[in-house]
Length: 581
Image (cartoon, rainbow, N blue to C red; front, side, top):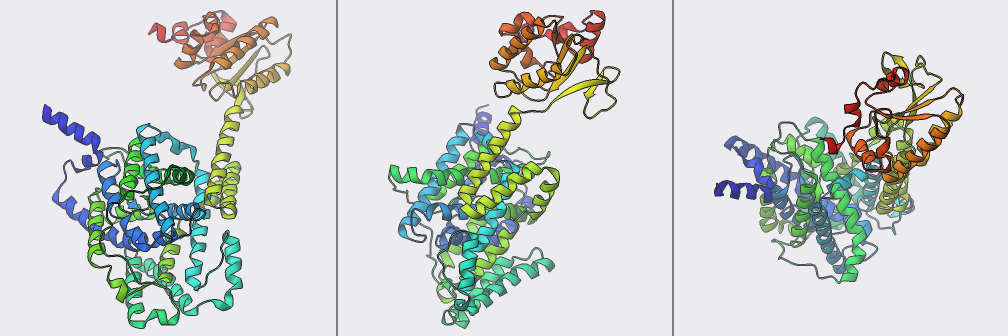
């Protein structure tokens, strides 16, 4: 019994171990092959995304080692690849470049402290069970933001592809400045970059499983080494420190951490949202465990927290790499551990090769551009334009604001607009008049032209929680319908509350006043289909005396029968509350 309790506690602390139950030799072989395959992707991608973030390329390798191992023990998904991500990198660059010069010692210290702070934020939110926050980033905002970020990331690599330096600015200013510098372009660098782009695109169409990025990196290093690329003006990476970094704790002041907090919060939320999106999209009914939002926050947070101690920059799950993770045959996070061990070997023994065979930066830029091109979601934009114009406008506002103002500002504007739309929709929900279309069946009169409306009865449905923000809308709509009727004929107002899942004290006071006002006009207010929580709220409110067999009914049809015949056929169902269970 004690062993069972110990085992249960171990799985609770390290849920990633649950995937190892029933682990077989053939699964291990598949995981090993997949792990080595993913390592071939991670090495060039990690280095490239570190460069995007304004960091030395070795920081990308460090981010591919410790964080995936931590996630493999704490995460609840066996289908995602944890490591550097393009969106995180551009957020880091834009957030930190206003505080320090990219590449400077201060910048590097801030980047590691940022990783540490991101880990703290994500872990704390997970422990506090705030996993639901992912729901506040709507699909249009994410599509608009990621599509714009993809263009910004690609634009940021044009300097390395053209061999010139400009002052920067937004994507349009950057392109304009690069065109002005046309006569100063390094054509040798342009040639290397174009070759890299073609190599990343064309072979993939014939050999989809080809590790094009790694092969391009190796060929580029050989060519740059034997061909002396520096002598032609091609900028190269010729030094990557050998060995793992020593354990190091960021030493910033409280004021410096406070300046980092807005950037850290943005990176933390976007990293978590991306991770959960991949987890949920790949979830299967046959999985031993389902992705748990709060545990995922803890897992990603502690991966970043511990990674910061080893000079890793913020990590999260990658869409493209996770797809390759599964396609390579990965069955568990043993693949991720294998990748990490493989990269450790590279860091310990192979980095001195960069001195003899330097890596052209233009090739890293080509890898980055092709890797992030898939983040531009034109098909989803077109689809949303056809489905929902308001959400398409939200997408485009987020897209253009991100391009013009920057990734943080664009994301904040998109989230703010999403919340405003949410508030507007809940304050102005769908509310419709109903008519009879058959025996006991009532439907929206604006959709069903054959719906029959009785002159003495107004029947309507309210499709939202009834609370303080929409109670005025409710009143105005009901009174508008009443005013359109003959006041000498109308005798009953029937409120179908089937779609109302909650009601607050403000709305109850509003209903009480409406019932009294209608009573003065000799109009009876009737509620049908109230669900349990609504009945409970009414029972415990000043309206409790209103809960009787003449006012609350199980169905609209029961209410009509009572109006016509004076009989409530199911009062026990209509009036049941918690106190009666």
